[in-house]
Image (cartoon, rainbow, N blue to C red; front, side, top):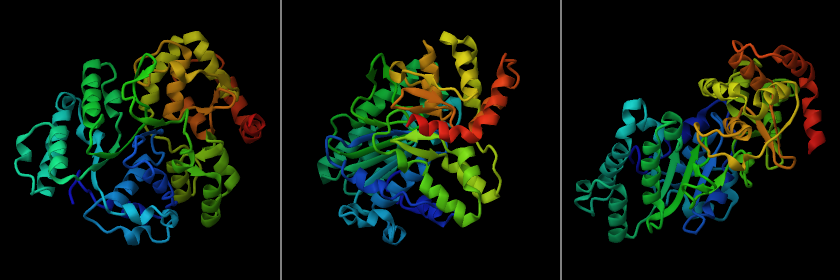
Length: 401
């Protein structure tokens, strides 16, 4: 086992050992159906702390050669599917967390080469029957050579795939180099059995077209049946509240409100923290992202500021997400900013009505913290209205379903 090649099951074991663990292994059979098909490229985008890394660690533990994960999955939901034993610890896995290669801005010019060097080094150790791999600097060339000599393919699991677009917001040349690297790594390569990427942002678009159009995307806008596998469902939260002696109605008002595939989805990190500490409050992290967005809200595209104030008073706002370029820098209209707020988890999206709104009390608290120094007219009244109406918010949502 290595760090990047066949990383094993240590990370997933820690999740199972945690005080709160909710079984999401029934995602595995859905992913199994994609292996070695034309649909083997998946990109799942969700806000921070929505269970993306947990799912990536679970898939790594399940697929990775070099470890025995049978006991970890015993009794879990996935084991009832016929495909489960077929793929259990039967695949070579390459697992990357792109954020680990971008710990500082100085890494931006070298991180692609560092990724290739680190993975090639471990591939040389894993495939001693293929001599001379380390002499080749390009990862795709090494993988092709391994496949030609052994006929063994790879499952790729990439976490924080979009970190480059969040760190290098304005550096188009670096973004392009990274996209070219991914395209070369995956497109029309026989060694790819499955490519599974997760991040906060969907895949970058240029105009109307995806920069990596070989991937099927599962986003906050269009979850395509994967909504309940990231975040907690009502039933799961209700059961945990009963187990921990916590008030479900209060939990609902604080952390519910994300609408995915017709289900109400809760922020899992916030629910877990509330259960652990027996305290309902905002556990949201990463507000620096929203602080940057505040600049664009203040530009007031098409009455954007007024729309945000109205949503703080429990209103809904029409939004067309189709024009978004899925990055942190390209904003032309109000809809572009609102779509990014949906992707970041500060708003939720009702596909049936085409409307967006603030999902819960936790996010209202974050809006308040972010604009406390902004001096927005009408903000105090909106917040007062939202605090009075928050108890009736669920009823309003259900009226739109």
